[in-house]
View 1 (cartoon, rainbow over the protein chains, first blue to last red):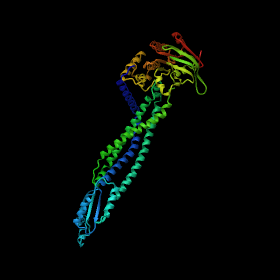
View 2: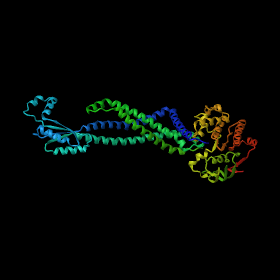
View 3: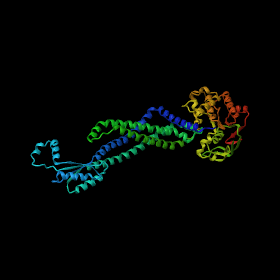
View 4: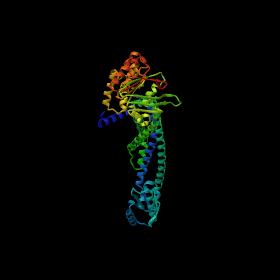
Length: 311
Length: 216
């Protein structure tokens, strides 16, 4: 028989469509069992995915904050405004520094008076005890090590009385998120394996159920590839739909935390878009779901298919 | 076409399915294999389809020794053969059409071609109107004809039938045999294992008689 290339391709596509469709119908035949399996896969995938999403959100919050990192440099007494401005201008030359704000002792007093409620007490003071302060705003691309080095340098300046920067807790936060991220990744890997085993077991049952079909297909000359295909599709379908369910669960979770998170973001002066995280989770989950599904199916098929031979 | 050269099949445990068979079946021939149950009729056919491998001797099909054929090439070998069983071996969860179409699907036939061939095949066995029903709703004779339609749909050069009339009354048996004769007319090499001696005698074709795994 002569077969043109296009006919060959269309036959190939048709074979795959048939396999995929028959796999889908096979699942439809036992909807409850299929649904339960999908839910188990979905929940299993949702757990690490939602943790990763929350991690990413917390990173966005602290990350944004780090961009606004600043160092407060308290000038020694007797450094008058003119000199302070000159120091500020000098500092602005440095590449790590975005701009420098001078907060004079008078400004500081004013601010303190209006915010602290100690106005009357302050009036009792003879002179202003507050120093001039340089608020050094850093450029966003400084690592915490850069910042620490810069802080050490600034501390050595002759005009410096003391310095303060809020790097400490950011570093701690970063270390904590790093540790959590590792843990989540390990957890995700373990749960991914679990998904693979769940799908592998489902496929194994499926193979046992379709024993006769496999035997007859072998009798009429069906190749291993042909026999394997519908089962791989079942794995793929479980992986894909399991991932979609997981995504749904993650999205629901994000929606639940969106209220408190919004307030948190406000405190950090940032806006976070949850739909971006939801999309990110989707893009992560689908390939992972599909590959674990296929891998589980592949394992089961290779283990069990060869044991089925026609009588 | 099919050439047995001192072929034996010894099963684990020492029992022989067939022993020391030498036999030549010309291309386009039709022959019956007779003998009591357990005489080795099925084993002979199963060896040709590589459902069993010979433990000794050479089995040449189309000039090729299939005794040592690698596992991977077995599907391609089976596609040269149409197999018919006493118990039909139809899949009862799909229609007659889909049962008959299976050999074409495993060969990757284009959809339109599948439809044409399946209907042509069902037409030959007189079941064109039953393509949509499930095999289980058919009579035993009809189911056997579906099995035959499935075996011939891909137009294989060899047709092997193991007790195809085993469960049928004489009239239906005759009809089934007539179908085989008709396909043989088209040049298909046909081997039919049967113990329906009366019917075989009437048809006047070569008979291979087996007793305890040996030719007589």
